[in-house]
Length: 251
Image 1 (cartoon, rainbow, N blue to C red):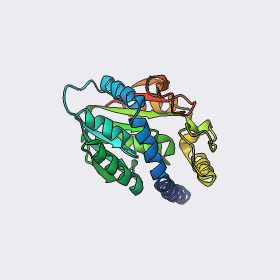
Image 2 (image 1 turned 180 degrees about the vertical axis):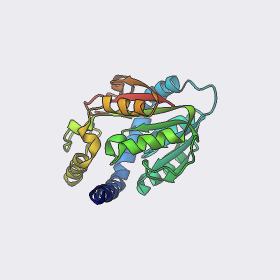
Image 3 (image 1 turned 90 degrees about the vertical axis):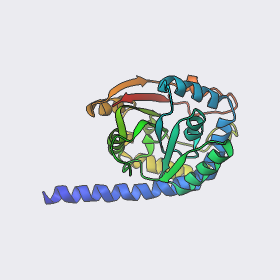
Image 4 (image 1 turned 135 degrees about the horizontal axis):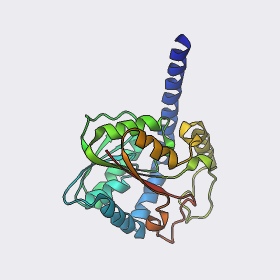
């Protein structure tokens, strides 16, 4: 029993340390990341995402939506422009600063709060929709995140998660200015790879693992193996070559 407790404490402390590293990494990336998202918002990708999300949400009115890992506010701007009530959370304070500025400049409204995606400060059954993009691959405990996201969904609410199986990928510095990873310092690229390799989710093959776990929580799950051709439609932007999967899960 004592050894089990010690192992749990050690794992918890390791996750806390990883959270600190991840937060610091995204704080430093916030300015460049915001410029990337603004470029995406100004081009055909934003139009494509807007149409895709309208189709998946099929909303007759305004929905209460939690944007987990909002980053620079990409989804918050699109969903806010569709008339939804958006709350964006991120563990990076610098990212939230960018998001607030970007939403204001876009003429939209959204609420932003600094929060860990794995420990949400909301009561049960709060949101109609929980949405996230390219976040779960960065989380020390994706299972706990999924539990929390389900908890704050209203009965019948939907989870939309878009991500890639980055566990098998090694990131490298890009010189091509059209590449979405251009101009990132080599030190940051190295740090990103080191963090990724420490995360348990990197050992799972996705989205099969995600779908199986969400079903174990009692959710109905639909998987789209690759939505990249639908939403990465800007020839002037070079994205990752990995499939961008879409998970739509109902509580």
